[in-house]
Amino acid sequence: MTKFIAAAVQMDSQDDKMANLAAAERYIREAAARGARLVVLPESMNYIGRDMAQEAEAIPGGPTFQRLSGLARELDLWLEAGSIYESNPEDPARPFNTTFLICPDGTLAAKYAKLHPFDVVLPNGVTSRESDRVCPGKKLTVAETDLGKVGLGICYDIRFGEMFRIMALEGAKLFAVPANFTVNTGKDHWEVLLRARAIENECYVIAPNQMGKKPRFTAYGNSLMVDPWGTVIARASDKPGVITAEIDLDYVTKVRQSTFTLDNRRPDVYQLRKL
Ligand SMILES: NC(=O)CCC(=O)C(=O)O
Image 1: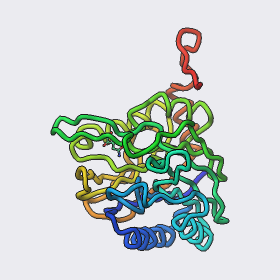
Image 2: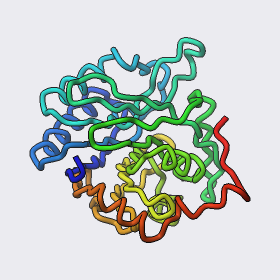
Image 3: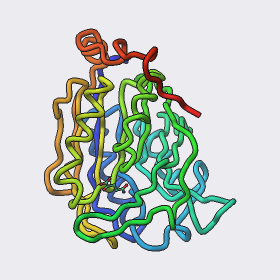
């Protein structure tokens, strides 16, 4: 399928998992009613609080996976489930922050654990040490779907251009980047980073963000969908909700055949290495 509708869901998730899942279900149903074949949820969609380890679940198999899998099957769509905390048997106190893609038949297509924990000291004095509470993943993930190859990243990952370039070289034409991006950084960096990743890799970017006050910072909202030319094709308001836009994979080819940023690289002079 070269043309389809995709949706990004902006949420204000808090520490009530049942309420977050009920909200996600409402938005997924709304996206399906608006014709979406692919729905992308934000980072930490089912829980934002201080007990990450306690709230961690198995993927697949856990209750959040089961509920979302049932919805993907019922609504016959691809569901990129934002991220949840995934149980980590080797270090139970530090779960993974994992995003996962569910096929329309309800099975798991792919999962990806955030590679880059949000370990920063922000200009407003806020310090984040996600790696104290979350175990970083160890591999990149490009999911095969009947909508094309989808490269997966989570929030702070968007700052690491190498990762997205490698996924583009592996065939991704679309990146799904669920986020819980801060207001403090987001006002200057969010849109610029998303558009840069889209332009330099000539890919669509679907980036649903959290909004509202969280325990450690306020989330920026402004969920975006960007096309391979870098044009913003959908932007959320300052409320939770669904944005949709048409994805046209032929347009990816058209842009790639105009600016040639993937073809005109100079691997004889510099190279990206995946270890
Ligand atoms: N949840 C995150 O990874 C936050 C990333 C963020 O806000 C940033 O500025 O980067």
